[in-house]
Length: 124
Image (tube, rainbow, N blue to C red; front, top):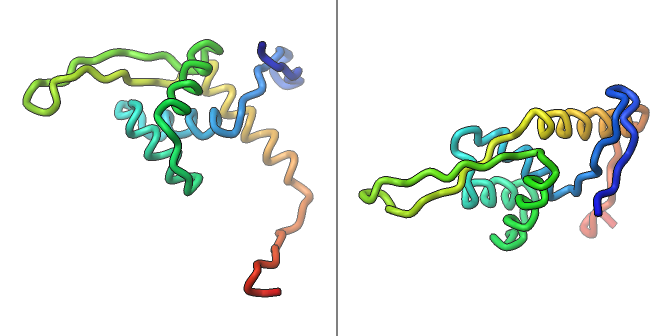
């Protein structure tokens, strides 16, 4: 079951994506032709300073495939390097639009908020 919101700019319903799905879409966009499971996981884990399991990553990638935000291509790797096939991901037009939407709404949400500073345990 997908949750939707109305996009007044495009005049269409859009899927709500999770923060992990957002990070995966950004990673796929940044990695371009090198976006496969391991490199996507490294990028996402580095962004959050948290190690994600490959199972969590592939579950989210499957959700993004189902929503039409990414597409995948299986490529064979030469035997000299690894010999196994890899599944590469790329953003679809719908995925690009979803990322633009997330960025637009985040910027709009934070627009009038002054720079925030938080007290850490050391500064208390």
